[in-house]
Length: 496
Image (cartoon, rainbow, N blue to C red; front, side, top):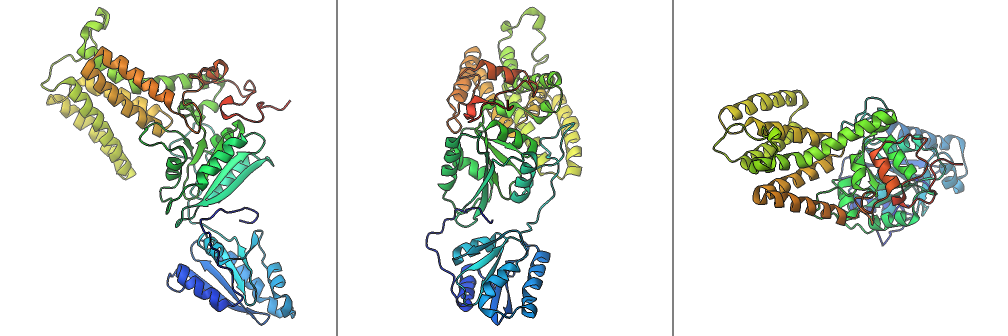
């Protein structure tokens, strides 16, 4: 793009030759022009000079290309100054994004990104014109972040559209979109978004440094690969960055002082840094009144706790009925089966996972029917034949509903893994297993740091004011300061 520096992996640049034959030979050997059907060159003569226009079919807008060709060809009808052919051609490139290029390696990178390259006989510099038109869908509401009221547009796989959706919401002259390329072969465009006078400069530099140090062939999995390089997660199941497909959510975090990472071909935007409590909030809470938003948030918190601790507690009461008061003696299986309860719980829990994966891979018209078959036939028959007791199905279902109520898909899966270990700990050691397992779980979360950010902030370390904003959804007018965890340069949300 014009006016934006691109970081590439090339070190030895091949200069553009004044002989177009040499340049054409380079393109043929380097990227297969003449071999790959989607890469081509259009050769024309302007003011007695040969001009080559290189393009990539499918990534550039043909109508723009045709219009540019018309303008260039008309030069022969109106101009006679052959010595100034380069300047005349540049003035006829009717496009808002035109830049020069001095080496063929950069020209190749831009060509494979969908821009066109214009080379002129006798000139050692060429022109790059951004006529990209990537195939893709139009902005629509994300499936995983639906709201009752609110905007229906969402990020798509086109990084240009995503930056436009963000800038439409923040028309601040201090909003910055810095672009670089990562991947020796894929050369994927990555955009770092932040507000200059709000975001911590140290955080911005840290993100840039981590991205520039990525050394890999390609980013075929897009933003997920970037995350693994950025936060070095290893086998920790808990998400260290937050994903969103909603431009309003991304804009809100920008105004708080966060740094966003947009990856071309990925509809999700990475928000850094994030804590555990960023993953339990949803846009719906801010589309309702503060009272309703607080109620929705508490219900969601209850669902998350249910998904994590309900099943281990029920298994504990089944194994240790003496822990229950007489009024709660009904908790537990009302009939005995030949299969131990803990085995039933594990089979049912993995069964829910089977159904979830099957629903993902099943065409939408069939997924509903599959769910009905699984819920009615399999569940009912499993109880009738004595494989499960009804209580196991009940508590597994409630825990699954709590997982689905978790806004972050990554957090729900991580909680499910933690729940599985808690259930096994309870089955092996009963009360000490639950106590020790819960303690280990909390210590794990306390030890996690995402880009030098404590994962359980503002609970640990405790920040009373910030913690109250987690518990209670405050009105926009009442939230006057930005979260201190991102170290914003400007703490006040509302200018005085």
